[in-house]
Structures are given as structure tokens and as C-alpha cells.
Amino acid sequence: MLRTISFLEELGDELEDFGEMSSPNPNLRIMASLMRGHIEGKIVTATSLIGASRAPYATANRRLHEMFDAGLIEKRPRTRSGKSYSMHPSESLLEYWVQLSNRLQRLSSVHYSSAAAPDTTADYYYGGTYMNVKSIPPLQVLPDPLKLAGGLRVLVHGDPTFMVMDNLKRQFEQTLGTQIHQRAFSIDRLRYEAKRNADHKSSRYDIIAVDLPWVGEFAESNILMPLEEAMDIAQLDPADFHTAGWQAAHWGGKLYGVPAQTTPELLFYRKDLFAENGLAPPQTTDELLTAAATLHDPQRGRYGIAWNAARGTALGHTVLMTLADFGQPILDLPKIAGGFRTAHLSKREYRVTIDTDAGLKAAEFLLELMKYSPPEILSMSWYERVRPYASGRIAMAYGYTLLAPYFELDETSPAQLQTGYLPHPAGPNATPVAPVGGYMMGIPANLPKERIADAVAALRVFTSPEAQKLYVQNGSRTNPRYSVAADPDVRRMSPIFEAVDAMSWRDELQFWPRPPIPEINEIIQICGEEFHDMLRGIVTPKEALRRAQARADAII
Image 1 (cartoon, rainbow, N blue to C red):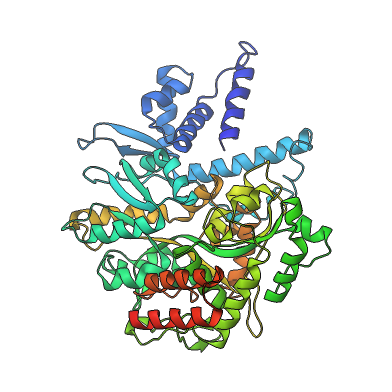
Image 2 (tube, rainbow, N blue to C red):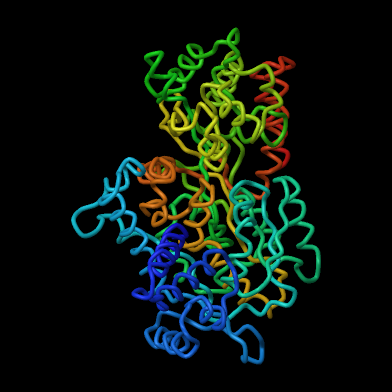
């Protein structure tokens, strides 16, 4: 859309320079200036629009009021007195500009060289495009600015998606009509800060990001407010969210947050290396080990696979997900069609299931993976496993989709445009699973009442389809909504969205591998410690299972 604006402005300059036979088009100049300000998050006033029109004041003022009357421009008070206004595009103008941008791109490719954009007409039929009806328009400003003393205060995780939000802060401030103060922490520090905030009489944050496995703990400890108490849940369009991500945000039948990023852990693999070696994408754990052995070539500085194996939280997550690969939840969950039932967990009727036959197979599988992993594998965690994959040192890596920008957006990466995406290959008598990770955004239970309504309004904006599309366009590779994954602009950004969407429809996206019980964080830590000793050769697999089971039982 910014390219469209620049093109029209420069074309206007050329035509107006032609001489007295051509005059400015004030309507187009006004719309272009308004759209540029909206997209760049800058305040636009009536005076600035009149100046941008390049028409005499009286003419420009008249055209501006005609556009108000036509419903193309909306005003929002800038001060409490209501005497000063900012100008914003209406929903109809936003939709018109999306269509205009697409049509101009198509026309330029038809009438000029198609070499510059060889694939831009692939989805078109005469007069339009099959997919544009699903295109999500840009963010629209709230009719009334939020009235939050000191601005909106947000606590988030320091991952790529939330950093994209921070980079777009000015645009969100424009949308909400208030300042935004965002603090970002590592995963363990984020949990500590959220719990510490709950001890205060009044919350220091209006919105907090919560890792999905923490939901049970945060609900039971009264850290989060049930959203039913603050809003009409139907306004969120629940059916638009990936089922696993939406269900994971519930505890005891109540919604405690809105999914802000659904990021399953997948297997990233180099399609070019697989093709060169005659390998098919692995569907089972045995096929994965065969591929890892084939592609493992330490003499040439290339290793078969990377994964979370650092002691503690990182390896603990791997253990739970590997148990799931062998069809074993960490708890004794009842089996149902498509997975395991978790709705009953708030009744606290569960026990840990680590020391089992499936647990032994999972432990032995991790020991096998060690043979085809880089030398520093036992210190590898979230980012460390994907960076060497992006550089070409690793042929395969388990990784969350939020880490895909490390190679998808790096033109120097040999993995760019050469990465395939799969759910976790399954062990014997199990089915492939893509364990759901990511964050939801919730309202602290101790937030002062006078701030709740505005916090909810901001929460809806941050998790809206329009915002989610904006994150993707600025580098995010996470998405909790079906509508965003179906958007043609989003699908062109990365194949990861179509792949995850397909996994969701096949019921491969599951959150039961990390059930959100209050004790899950401690259980993850226990597994990350005991299995690390096993991988270092200090204890046998059976001993690691026995010790982890005993410690987890004591926690429960």
C-alpha cells in the first residue's frame, strides 16, 4: 500500500509538471496523505490534509468536507475538550485502498514487463482475484481514544513476534489513541515478573503475556482475570482461532486469555539436502534417525539434527514433546478421538506418567539423536538450535514457527526457500503431533476497575485479524487465526502458514503434550534435570525415568 501511495504521488508530480493543461487532483492527494499517515502511525490533521492537496484552501476544504460526508474520513478527538481532532481513514476507505493497490499491481504487470513480478498475476481471473475477498484490511483506529492514566502498560515475552509489536508501537499508539509502555523478559523472568505483579495491591500492567502451559497455575493463583467477567467473549470470534490454541487458553471452563501467537513446534528440514540424498520427508521416528544418520557429516562441518537439550526448562520441554511423539502424555489423560482429554484438569484428578514403556522408548530415542547432533547439543536451547540450521551447519531442527524468520528472512541462509515443515515424526503405534506453544494475552486479576474496559479494548486490537496480519507482514511467523492464514497476502509471505493450517485441520495441532496444570513448570524443570544427567551418561535411561517419576509424584 505504501508503494501504491508513492507511485500515485510521483505520477501526480509528473502529470502536474506537464504544464498548465494538468492540475492537481486534491481528492487523490488527500487520500494518499491520509493513508500514508495511518500506515506510518503519524498524527494527521485537517490542516495537513489541506496542505497535501496542493489545491487552493477553499477548494481543498470543500473537498475534505465532501469526503467526510461520503464516509471516507473519520475524526477522533485529540484532547478532552474535543476542540482538536485527528483524521483517520474509515473502514470503507481502507478496503478501497487495499483493492486499488492490488489492481495497480496487476495492471502494471499486464501493461509493462512481467519480469519484475512474474508471479503477481497467478491468482487472477478477468476483473479481479479469487482470493481478494478474504484479504484483511489494515488496522482501523478506535472511534474514541483510550483514557488510561500514564498510557497502556504491557508485559510480554522477548520473542520475535512481541518484538515486532514493539517495532510497530507508534502505529498501535495511533490506533489506540494512547501511549504504550512495553516491557519484555525471557521466559523464566516473565513468569517471575507476572507472579510478583500479582502480589501488588494494584497491577502495574494492563495486559500480560502468558505462556500457554501456565494457564492453570495463573488461574488457580488468581493472577489472571476470567475474561467472561470483563467482556462478551463472542466479540472475539472464537471459531476463527485454531482449536488447540483456543482450548489451551481455558481453565475450568473459563477463558483466561486471548491467543496472541499460536506457534507449534515443528520439524524443519532442508528439502534440497533430502532431494540430493534421495530421502523422503520423515514421518516416523525411525525414518528421522535414518535421515539424521545419512545427513550427518562432521568432517564437512554438517550435523544431522539440532534440538532443545540444555539443562532445565529447555530440555524439559523436549522430554514432554518426545513422550507425545511416542503417544504418551506426561499425565494419565483419558484418550479421545484426535488426542487426549484435558477439560477435567481443573478438578486436579491426575497423576504423572513418566516411568512407562513409552517413556523408555522416548529416552532411548533422545540418546540416539545425540549421535547425530552437534558437539554443543547439551547447551542448545530455543534460539541456539535454529541459528546453526539457518547458517547451514544443521540439516534438520526441531523448532517453533516463531523462530522461522532466522532463515526465512535471511537472504544469505542456505535454508531460505529450501525448508520443509512437518509435525513431529511419530513413534510406533503413535500419530504425528505438532505440540502447540505460544502465548496468550490476559488481564491481571488485580487491575483497577477503572482501567479494565480500556485494557479489554486494547486486548481486542492486539489479537485482532488486522493486527495479526500486520505482525506477519513485519516478520512474525506465528498466527492464532484461520482467517489470517487464509489471507492471500499472508500466504505469499511464507509456506509455514498453509502448513500449520493443514495440521490444524488434520488434528495434529495439540496442546495436551504440555498440559496447563499448576505443577507443569516444576515437572518440566525436573525432566530437564534428570534427562540431562542421562544424556551426559551419569545415569541410565531407566534410572532417569525412575528419578523423574518420583520427584514429580512428590510435587503432585
